[in-house]
Image (cartoon, rainbow, N blue to C red):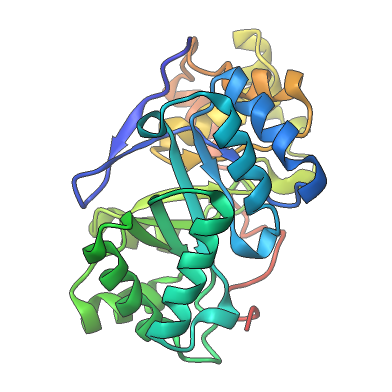
Length: 277
């Protein structure tokens, strides 16, 4: 089976660089889809309370026969549960129960929800959860440098990861630079642009695909990996899952990598972090 590279996190733990995301996966189909992903070879699964499919992920894990220590499971705290340490802890325990797990590998604050001004307190609660041993690593999602600066200043604890919208048209270089300076790993959601612009038709992507005998999607996933990102392509189709996993037998040249990076144009295709409250 293909061996997925692991990255070292700033807390000493490691994380598989390629994972499988279940955003917008129908809860009724989640068990089948995650089972397919695990059979293809994925060992890193990324879900969230708000996706409504943690139970399906948990059932797929339970029936997989894969030892727990070989899996890396992430879920996320929704903004309705940021209010207090008690609400954060209750939400965490509920997610753990739905997943049928004794511990999580990674727990994230899903959005900073700045108008609520509760993310610092929620981060303090995550720090306590990590101390309890029920979660091994903690991080954030959709945090901008101002949010990251504040939680670090007020707690002294640096997130292990920041999961952000990241694809060639929208690379968030300011977040990337802050993360690099603080040894925060970037996790890319929507890594293929969610099909909302013709990424695969871009000459830089198409040329690299032709040069390596790969699909445009494989080229973009490979670009993310070579950027040092942790990446979660998603698909409901097993053959596409396998295709997305088959990205470790080629390397983009520096010129190819740079040409794809040059596609940056602040082309956000989803919500801005200030808008989700």
